[in-house]
Length: 475
Ligand code: HEM
Image (cartoon, rainbow, N blue to C red; front, side, top):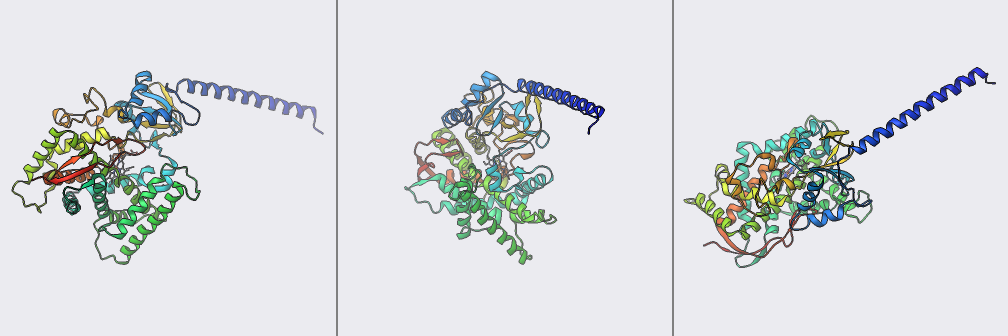
């Protein structure tokens, strides 16, 4: 039997616990209320789909910057929305974008969809933080930045470009974007695996397309879905990569000068995850390097076709450095880098193309910024489009005007096609070489008639008809 004093003690204890519980609840609710009160302004749109419909409609239009510009003028450069990315805060000005990019790993981490992480693999540098990301990133940067390699990369791209162009027949209609894709794929395979064009290279390309088709699917293994097919393509690609690694281990005396070799060397001391680190980081490189550079080069040709004065100037610049050279003679790294106007065409094309309209991050904790709270777990989109179309920095911003890059010094914080902070694209030098080499050979050998073309900004940057042209000899 329970004595009356014990019952009283229990009752008091329950009472005290109840009071604490109630106080905690009141505190939590008021804290949550205060937090909600301090969310950035903006609209979350409709249940489930949020503001996805207006976003996609506007981003696919000729004026893709309108979605964020309209909201920025209503709410300021930090506002909330929802775009299938869940609860999201968009940040659209230079200062805000810098804040997010430079707090990588401290306040924010990459927040790409789960399907992308599954398909490329969680050990890919894009999803890693800390030591592994730093090492993988530095490895790739070293690979493309060392001086002997730069010379070698220029020559490799040049040979593949000349080889690709030698198959073009004059007077025939070709889809330039597909032709460029073929050349840049061969270049990538050579840099990644030391692989020459052939059956294996074609198989990798086919599997890669299946892989990429699944990156924004629902991450469930349902046979027949793009995600399911992508995961199967991942298995096939993983086997191809590990077979190459095994062959190299069996013949250690053969020297390889490619990214796979740099990766193998980098992870030598790693424990059990070594295989996954190699596979995932090869796949993230293919994902970044296979499509976007080809589309950017195709867009540069489209822009030049629509701007005869720019075409004339880029041709003059490139013909000038060919003077006195044999047609088969290569150009040095320094000669490519001296092509100022060609570089301006590349910068201007990237500014307008916005292959990466922004990057995706997730808040690691409640982040206080400009008096607002970005709650832990929310998606954060540092958005580059508004900055690239800033009328003060880029007057008449929707117009292709490469001269603007020569007329004034544009601060790096306004030039974001390669992202920024610790994830600044490690492949940007490679993309520059590819573009400069391709444009050099195109404008010094050919003239062309181009059909009208439109840019597609969503879900991936591309062109509607893949830039159809009829080519003729320049002379
Ligand atoms: C015009 C072409 C290219 C554009 C516009 C571009 C753009 C970008 C952007 C915006 C990022 C940052 C992503 C983020 O912060 O979340 C990035 C990262 C990356 N890019 Fe590129 N890229 C290009 C070409 C390349 C090439 C040719 C390669 C490889 C050879 C490459 C490899 C990578 C890798 C591995 C990352 C992840 C870096 C990390 O997380 O540490 N990219 N790229």
